[in-house]
Length: 597
Image (cartoon, rainbow, N blue to C red):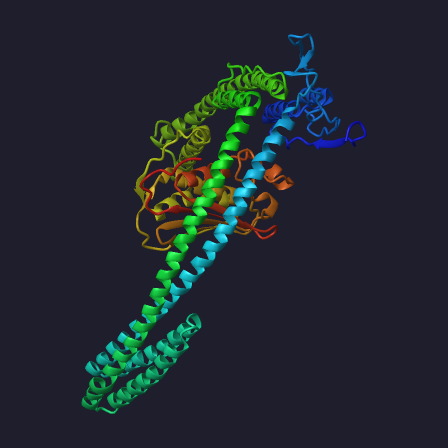
């Protein structure tokens, strides 16, 4: 094993970087911190840490690491143990690790391996004994289950006999083909049950043969009664029922009762045997478990000072770090690998604290940016809306009818654009779980009509056919009408933007207690590999068509969040060159806002 042992090569590859430039630096730094922490914890060489630092500064995520971990028999993952402390005994002899003339300082790995080996042996012994006991208990249980199946089959035979008697009585009281057909079906069912009993009760051949013979007579009598009823001789059929069918049914019941009694007696005996087996197994397993428990306590006490207590301290420290407390530091008295691990955790905690401060600063910058954008966009748009309203009010003179229609359209679309700006700004509230839906009753037809009116001019400009298909008479729905209209408007707007020829269809389908809104276009379609990521923020299909159309990649993300807040889901059906169909399903009556994730 010693110096001739072959070195092992380990290769680490960092996780893929975030797509956005701002997020990439933060993610990369966080990943490098945790990778550095993992490397230091495993005792890697300083070359990895140096490369991690260079990678963190340059932003290069393609770096690969080759680490040779020397397989020294006295090392722990390539690290040599700390030198043993020596002291003098009373007679002057050298004492190392508490034993005169003997040095034994096992690494943490050796301690754990020894403890795990002993525990595994104890577990194996308990497991073997438990398996033997379980096998015997399983055999007993299978016997009891088989007996229970027998009893169930016998009871089913008795039940079917009573059903046939009831069917014959019903046929006598209401003689028609329907009741007679029921009687004949019950005869076939009884034959099936008899075959089932023969399968599960192969040891009751004599009684089963008697049951089969009596049942053959029973079938003959029932068939004779059916023929009499069909021939219009109900009185004779009634007499045959009383004289022949009743006694045969009683005899069948007695025979099946004998079968049931035997099976129940066997089941009681099997249960008693299982109980005795369980008692013996319980005593044996308990004894072995107690012995294992005592040995485990002794072993745990032996290694607790050097392993368990430091791990507990580090565990509590990591819990504080996970809760966001980066000010505390972990203090471990060990001089082995656990002591070094605690030092590395403290170093990682300091770096995480710095990263957390940077993230808070980035969040503040984001909020400030949204506030500034809100002001810069709303101010000119409000001016446009104000002047258009003044024109409609006749402040600048009575406008012609043609101009009035155009100004009204400007005002309507301007207000809708203002709502879209507010909705884009609400995306941060949605992510923070602070946006609340305004639940009211609304008309699905009116919602679709509003969206259709808003985008009609956009479709006309591109000479596209804009069609709607809404079933008439849909009951009123409940939800946030403005948010749902925004979601549908975003989908229709995208369809018009990416469709150069053909048509765009808006469809509504009622499904039990929900509605499905769909937007179908004849555009270029979306590749399957891009369909999953187009619903993410700032994500678009990377092709020339998307670049020429522009956009920030927020529309579909907002639609997805709005639909999920209504407790619904959204999906896409598309192939390249065959257009796309976006659909979302929302409850018809939403009484409470869905949980945001």
